[in-house]
Image (tube, rainbow, N blue to C red; front, side):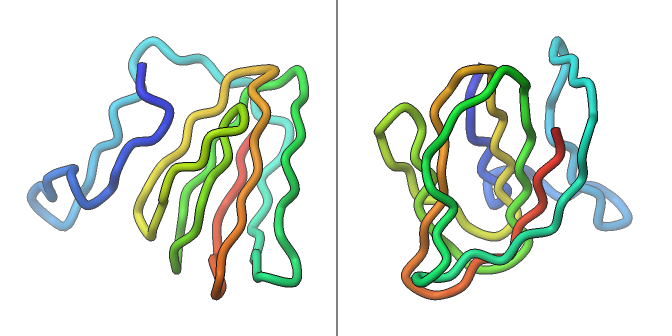
Length: 100
């Protein structure tokens, strides 16, 4: 399954609803955090034993997944499996939600 669901590629349904397909994924939620990342405050690469879901609220940046960077922007959803090294950096400002 894809690790990044590109929000701009997901069609908007009636009433402004966007459905991000998550079938087959189970997530035990232990935290919900709204974060702001800037050039001076990058979210440094790390890994841990739990899954996480990130949702980009505003801005754009680069997500590092096991050492490979991919561009992300507002409305993108990132699905992180346990032990995948992950981080986020930007050259401006990015506001995002971390659920894990």
